[in-house]
Amino acid sequence: MKIGELSRATGTNIETIRYYERIGLLPAPHRTAANYRSYGDPHRARLTFVRHSRDLGFTIEEIRSLLDLSDDPARDCSEADRIASRHLAQVEDKIAQLTLLRDELTRIVGCCRGGVAADCRVIEALGDHGSCAGAH
Amino acid sequence: MKIGELSRATGTNIETIRYYERIGLLPAPHRTAANYRSYGDPHRARLTFVRHSRDLGFTIEEIRSLLDLSDDPARDCSEADRIASRHLAQVEDKIAQLTLLRDELTRIVGCCRGGVAADCRVIEALGDHGSCAGAH
DNA sequence: ATGCACCCTGTAGCAACTACAGGGTCAAGA
DNA sequence: TCTTGACCCTGTAGTTGCTACAGGGTGCAT
Image 1: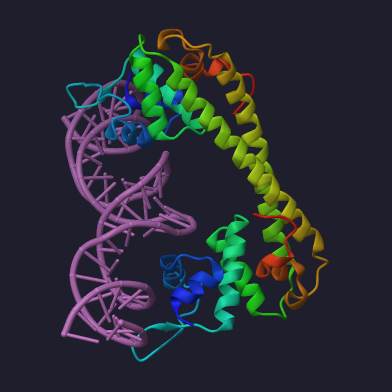
Image 2 (image 1 turned 180 degrees about the vertical axis):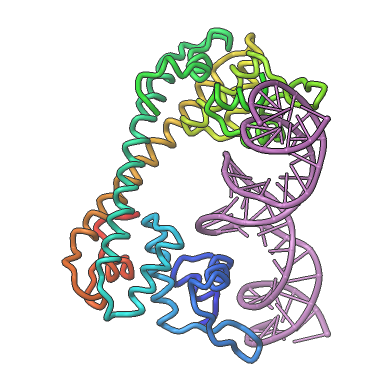
C-alpha cells in the first residue's frame, strides 16, 4: 500500500510516517518505479504498535526499546514490564501533580467576583505564591 | 540586583530570565557600566508572577494576557477569570485523560507474568488497540 | 492535454526552554 | 601585580514530537 493508505489505515499523518522512518523507528519500505513508498502488513502492524504506544504516552525512545524487544522474541520480557511500570508511575505522578494544580486553580478562580483588575483575586493570587494552599 | 541574584530569589534559571526578556515577557532592565543587567523589586514581582503562572501550567501567551491585565488596573478582570477558568477546564480534561491512560497501563502491566518477549502481554497489548478496555 | 490527487525531498517552524561557545568583568588572595 | 574563580555578556543551536510548507514529480481520468 502507498503512504496515503497506510496513513488512513493507522490514523497517522503522512508527515509523521516519514518522520518515523527518518528517525529509524520504522524501516524504510520498498519503493515503486516512481519512487513511491510501498508498505506491507508488517509495516502497518509496526506503525500501529508505535501509534498505540504514543497514545499511551510512551516516548519515542521507550518505543524504540519496546520494538527492539518485540523484534527479538527470545528475549526476556522483564524490560518491557519495567518500561511500562516506570511509565505508569510517571503517569500517576502527573495525575497527582495535576490534581494539586486543579485544586489551586479552583481556589483561585472561585475568588473572582468581577470588578476591575486592581482588585482581581486571580491576578493577585498569581503574583503571590505564599497564598497557595499546597505545594506545586 | 544582578541576574544571578534574581535567579536565586525567584528560583528561575538565568537562561530562562534572559529568554523571557528576549520574548518580551519581562521588560529589559537597566544596565550597569559593565553592561550587566540590574533589576529592582518590580522586576522580581513580575518574574514571580510569571513563574507562578507557569508552575500552574499557563502558557506564555496566557501569561502575556494576564500581565497586560495587571498592568492596567482599571480594566475589567473578567478576562483574567475567563483565562483561568479555561485553563482549569483544560487541567480537568488532562486529568480525566491521564486517568483513562493509567487504567489502561495498569491493566497492561498487570498482565506481565515474566517469560520471553514472544509471550509478553505488554508487547502484545501495545500492538493491538482492540484489546483496550476504554477509548484513549 | 490537462486537471487533480497523490507522491517526493528538504528545510523551517512550533513551545518553552536549555546548553553551549567564545568572550568580558570584578573582587579576593598570593 | 598577577591570577584565579565566580560571575556576566551575546548569539546560536539543541531538545521532543511532530507539522507545514516550497518546489518539484507521477498517475489516472476526462
